[in-house]
Amino acid sequence: MAGIYIHIPFCKKACHYCNFHFSTSLKYKDAMIQALLKELELRQDYLQNESIETIYLGGGTPSVLDVKDIEQMFTVIQWYYNISSLQECTLEANPDDLDKDYISDLKSIGVNRLSIGVQSFDPVDLEWMNRSHSAQQAHDCIHDAYTAGIDNLSIDLIFGSPTTSDNIWSENLELATRYKIKHLSCYALTVEDKTPLKALIDKGKSLSPDDDRVARQFHKAQTYLKSNDYLHYEISNYCLDQYQSRHNSNYWNQVPYIGIGPSAHSFNGKERQWNIAHNQKYINALTEDTIPYELEVLSTDNLYNEYIMTKMRTSQGCQTSVIKGMGEKYERHFLESLSSLIDEGKVIRSDDYYVVVDDYKIISDQIIGDLFI
Ligand code: SF4
Image (cartoon, rainbow, N blue to C red; front, side, top):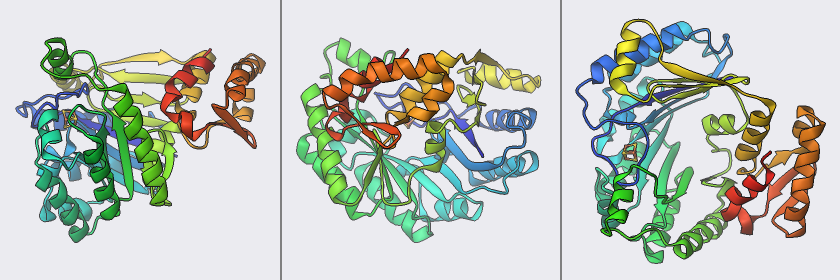
């Protein structure tokens, strides 16, 4: 099995906290689509005819595209890739791009899951984040998706921002559960370098996220969503039974994937490569049938660290037999580093797996750092 990720590097507006690769100018949209189609063709052998289980259009904002552009990509994927086992086809979308007709057209070309960047249902939150949509549009797009027949919805929500009071966060969670959203990605606001948010904080024009508020709201999501039958299957991800994101779960299970588009990463089990994060240079290179990328051959140390980093964030945890398969050095290091974490009650053993205890999930990154080689 394998996955295809396509990065659509355009957004209508720059959200203040965002450090993904995108441009707010759609001037080169058509040239970009041609370049993406070319890359899909040129890299058809990368996955060695492995069966594609998932396709994910992310970004950026894929919903700025016309349906015919997306359909063209699917056609080219069918030409060059083995999609006989395709299960999940996700499109990331912003609420202001979605209406019933657009969603039904997406459904008719094979999109069966929408990941919607709601972030909050509160107007003050949305304004503070500089989102392109209103709170009303966040509500409307969910109704439109259900009416158009796509009910496999994921929504992103951000907690911990200076405008997100505990009440607002509780309301956001309540609305998500009332709408019976199948999958929720709840992210703590982080201040990344080179973002407008970082500049605003440095100039004293915005408050930084408050650690106590972040912790409170993380725990609120854990307890509230659990009591509403959501599985907390990865540190930032919750879902109703059977609605895990297959695409992201495959990333965390080290399943190979190809990343198409500027800044997209690919992984084939031995190497990781990433395309240039520059729209014009990407388009120019593809016009000349070349792919502008860098590549890293992964050492066993890299593979061990990646395994720890991804799996320790999941509810399944890290499997001793997998680490043992990497060599005695890794098994010894893993078990030695774990002993104090187990003594402190931060990690528990469940059969062959080691899992971070619920109360300590908020410090997963610290625990993962302790296990790195
Ligand atoms: S819409 Fe998404 S990708 Fe675009 S700026 Fe906002 S958060 Fe970033």
